[in-house]
Length: 317
Image (tube, rainbow, N blue to C red; front, side):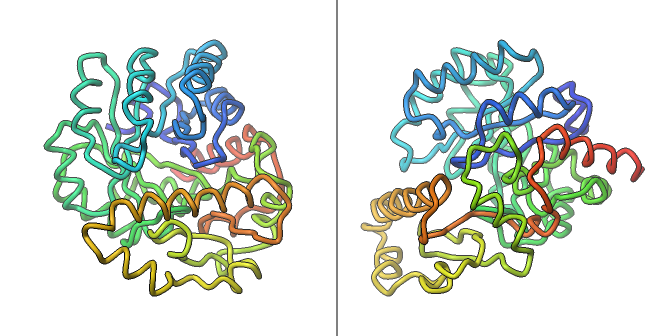
């Protein structure tokens, strides 16, 4: 079953939850364009703000939307965030970075669907066994924390071995890309990078302009920010900083006792740097993006970006 049938939407597209970037304006614009969208719970600092964001979207549209939830111990707000999502009965939750068992078990009785981020077959099998409704297959063309397998290989591998729907995440910039993913066996797609330079996006003009000025060849993987590989634009500052973790970071990450706490500290430190760069003009420009920036040529409203994307998709049949 395709994503549009699963959620009762017009097109099988999720406007992806992007850390720091996704906001209510972006979600509402997506819901008005026949697709669905999600935002990270961590984009809101307090439960009151998270609750207000969900209620604002619900008041504007009756169409389905979701929230991305970090389910491992590095998220101290996990339990309170999950409670809010259950209380307000969001349509779906996208889980990342941990065991989604509790989320799946608590969502099922309420009819809330759970889509789980996966980067390989092993983890996909685990979440299918736990009762996930679909997997978000994060491939090596994703922005942010990318996987290691190509879109085609990951979709086909999962299609051969799991029965739940596969939503492809990474490298989608055109309607033709969507059609290709579906032809390979995906039920739908999750699209992020091409919306960073939208009018509704809250990031700085410099970040948006960088998405226009740089291209696919300028996307590099860095382990300097969060301890995990992160795709960023190769600005002069990133070149100066380097993309490899230092010997100290590598040592801490290889020590089992220190690793969990180090990951938390590294993630917090790295994300603070990314946050400063996203919202302010600073020479310390660490901007997350995927190879799909190759197709970003102007700052446009989300409705315009989606109109082109869905029109291309419709004509690619």
